[in-house]
Length: 194
Image 1 (cartoon, rainbow, N blue to C red):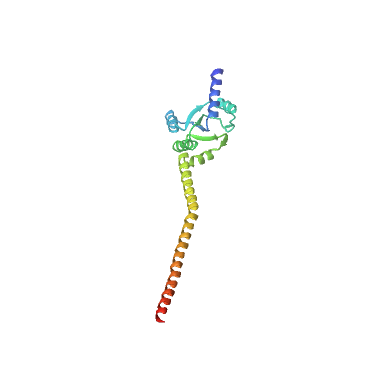
Image 2: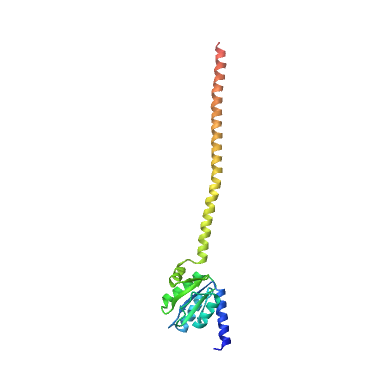
């Protein structure tokens, strides 16, 4: 590879490291071209899977400020540059690695932080962004419903208390009017007898 080609490859890889939200380093020793193509197709929309040269990738990672792959770039390496949902990309890699044990996840980087293979597996175990957003929306709706109930509850309690007081006054008013009416009747009847 000519120096100009190497410089262009390093620049391209550096750019991918900078623009990707995450990157996962894998070893693909023993995988067929068809299997790698299948993996690329399964990651489409969330990540691009590129077979890389170790020395060029090491230089590009240093240029981009990525230290997560230091000492791991040995053997046949490929990197999944994640542009979409990192959880979905991690799930795609994990599922493919389960079905094809020759794909080995060596490590990764997410938002500038190094990830171990175990952390990538934990990331893959998370629910997708859409599911988490739906759960968050449901929780917020429930919280808003409770808050609305708490705001309305004192008003409805006040209305019930006012209604109870009104009914009590009406009952007391009819109860006070009834003895007064009986007293006038008694006086009127008593006046007739005398």
